[in-house]
Image (cartoon, rainbow, N blue to C red; front, side, top):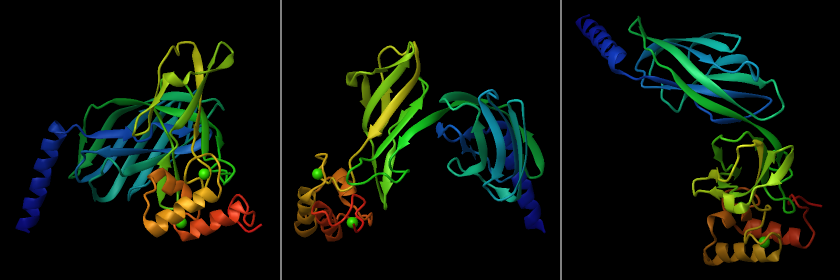
Length: 308
Ligand SMILES: [Ca+2]
Ligand SMILES: [Ca+2]
């Protein structure tokens, strides 16, 4: 009994200290999602042992419709979306310490336009409860979510093969953060870092010079030059065909040979070559891939490495 009292007391003290001193944060976790229908998530950090969280999100209702809110942490959710405002209340059956990485809720949306867009999301007036006390903190944060329009995705649509390179093409509005996409196969993944860019300005599409486009090692794409009249950007990220271990734009016996040397003699093959050479997606460029690529090269297998 004494222990319980001490514990309750310490929770209250912690809560009061936290309520004053903590800059607890609730944030929209994605910066880019696809237009049409989809979900983005909201997470929280620096909240300790909370029994409930409430927040309000404002957005542009002319571009975006919120169609539902699902609690992805344990507990119950109530929400109300109206006229560019989404109010959310979460109640946890047991006190929870959310982490920034783990989402609290996922929010389903539909964009009201087929065009790419960017919406400023503002989170307001968060309130949370610790030790059965409501604690409010005046906290407002804003971030832009960009909605991209995907024009082509050979990996998602199943066209990626020995004849068709991995490719993702999409449109965005200027000013958004652009990250080179990764393509995954089995347990490996690589960046599609080869990018070409066009801009829509003055009613037509114009190529952006390669010298104006740079991609950092961690995949951040920067476009320099004058984008003032640009309504939208089209980005095409291209990788290699499946099986093109040596990256020379064709899948043939030379790729099989390089993987065979790598597998048998431990001749180094770079990470990108290892990714594209692993045609069966088991995580290793091995003799099974050598066999499949060799069979493809002589016409026994089709471009998806299936029996003809
Ligand atoms: Ca090749
Ligand atoms: Ca393999």
